[in-house]
Amino acid sequence: MSSALRSTVRRNPGHRVLLACTLALATLLGACASDPKKLSENNDVGKLYEEAREEASAGANERAIKLFERIEGLAAGTLLAQQAQLERAYLHFKQRENAQALATVERFLKLHPTSPAADYAYYLQGLINFNDDLGLFGSIVGTDLAERDQQAARSAYQSFKQLVERYPASKYAPDARVRINYIINSLAAHEVHVARYYFRRGAFVAAVNRAQQALVDFRGVPAAEEALYLMATSYDKLGLTTLRDDTWRVLQSNYPKSSWLAQRSDSAALATR
Image (cartoon, rainbow, N blue to C red; front, side):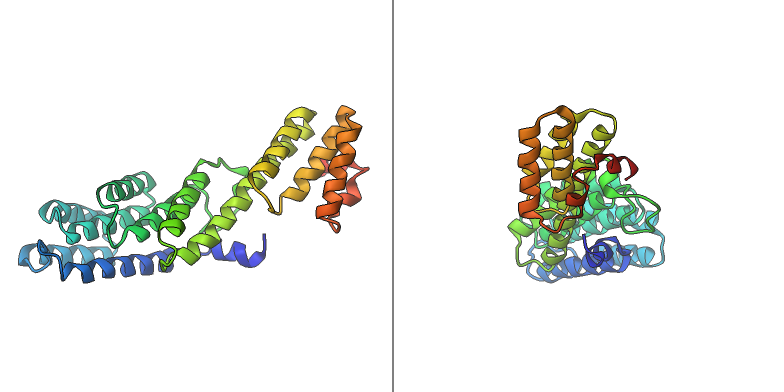
C-alpha cells in the first residue's frame, strides 16, 4: 500500500467528519422547508435544537446528546427528528462510544431508509467500524490492521460498499472508495499474516489454505506476492514438488520483479520477518 493511501486513511478525522456531519444536516435542514409536519419553526423545539448545538460546540457532548434525544421525541416523524438522531450518533462517535453510535445509526437507517441523509448515515456507520479500536485515525503505535481482529473492518467494508453502490454520486463516495481499497488490502494481508504464523510453526497445510484463501477472496492485492511465496515454500516442505513448481511459475509470471522470487531457495528467511 502506498504511503499516500496510508496517510489518507490514517489522518485525524475530526474536521472531516464534522464537515460531513454539517453537510448532511444542512441537506436535512433544506428538506425541512418542504416538510408539512416540520417543527423547526416551533419556538420550543427550535430553541431546544439551538441549545443542543451550542452545547455540542462548547464540548458539552453529554448534555447535547440528551437534548438531541429529547428533540427526537418531541419532533417525531419529522426531518428535524432525523437531524437530531444523526447529530446524536455523531456525538457518540466523537465520544468514542462506538456501540451507542452504531446503534443510533442502525436505528436511523432502519426507520429512514429513504432519508436525504441516508448516504451520510452509511458513511458514518462505516467510519465508526473502521475506527473501532484500530487507532487508524490517531497515533499508530506499532499496530497493523492486518494483525487485528477483522470483524470491524468487514463491517466497515459493508457500510462503505452500500454507500457507493446505492449513492455513487454522493459527496462521501470518493472517500468511501479509498477506504474500501484499504480495507480489502488489509483483509488480504490479514490472511497472509495468519498463513505466515502457521508456516513458522510448521503447520504447512494450514499455511497453504490461508494463503490460498487470500488469493481467492482478494484479487490483485499487494499481499498476493507473499501468499504465493508461502504456498510454494509450504508445498516444498510437504514434498509436493509439482504444486511447488506450479506456484513458483505463477509468482514469476504475475510478479516477475517480486523480491520473494529471490528467496525461493531460502524459505528460512521467512522466520525472521
